[in-house]
Image (cartoon, rainbow, N blue to C red; front, top):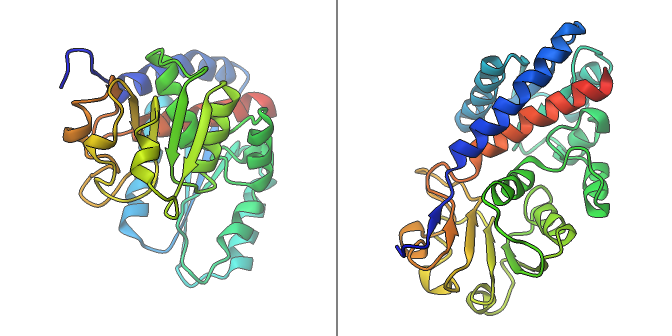
Length: 280
């Protein structure tokens, strides 16, 4: 690892974000309002259950109310949407998060679309996506927002830089590309069909890995001095970037494990508080 490499301490970023929320939560409490996040878990996937538990614990530590709704795996799309509609009309609920993936027989997109935009704190609706594309989303997808929060915290310059995003999912690769464009980066979006992918990555000043393949990005793909942000999470707490190989060439890199995950959760909490303030 070169002397110039900065390990982006994401836990520090997340801690500072949550500390900044405390006074806002206190002000809401004076008005008799407790920010509330409702999380829906369909089925018994252990990884999803762990994520929901982590989010609930994070809410509790900060004084945000957390409602956990567990639904059976065999529930229909219509029944799931009916549960979401109950939360939509509940004035005490400020944010709704549907833990994904859901069982295959459920129309996940239809379920996401049932969430009211003012409660879409996870940034999963097409309206939220469109607002992000135009640059005025109240709640952009949490992981893309977390990536930019980390870059801002460490003052990683985006304007005029060439960013290469590997991955094109509608809640990660696509929205983070748009957010980088809004910050005046030049963005190349790559994916599984990209020809000569490693050559594209070698041109990048900023690399965002969001492809969902463990240790996919190799060290010799990284331009010396590039900033590397690993948004991947794979079995065994392995990111999408070969961390040991890439850190020797990067100017800044997110750690593995821990990636951007802690800041993603902090962003979700921030969005919930934002929503409570707006709905107040």
